[in-house]
Image 1 (tube, rainbow, N blue to C red):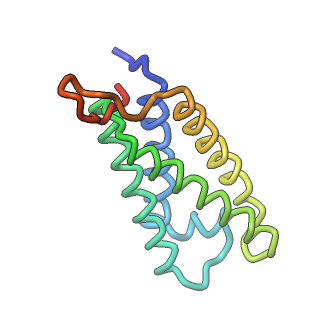
Image 2: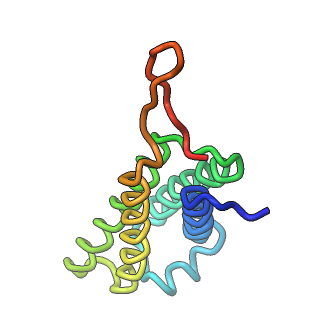
Length: 139
């Protein structure tokens, strides 16, 4: 049955995007560089790829379990915001190719949707029956 929850769908979408873009330079650096431009430090590209893929894996697990913790939302949106900022700043400095602006658009869209879901109260605290604050998870 397809998920009906927008947060679960967004986590799964970002997971696919991050797994694909994170693993790409690890499995075929030459095609990655053909699109994004030559890299002086391939080890750094691969390090970033592993980190992006790891975030994607965490989002995939959360999406599969249909449990999106508020902390994971911050990681997902924070990574997207950081990557978008890096894309825009370094394209403006002509350090990386303008193709990275396509990634920036995707990352900004992810931040915007996570922010909208956050504002809608899809995460936060609730009071448990015993009066203590309990974390609410997205389901």
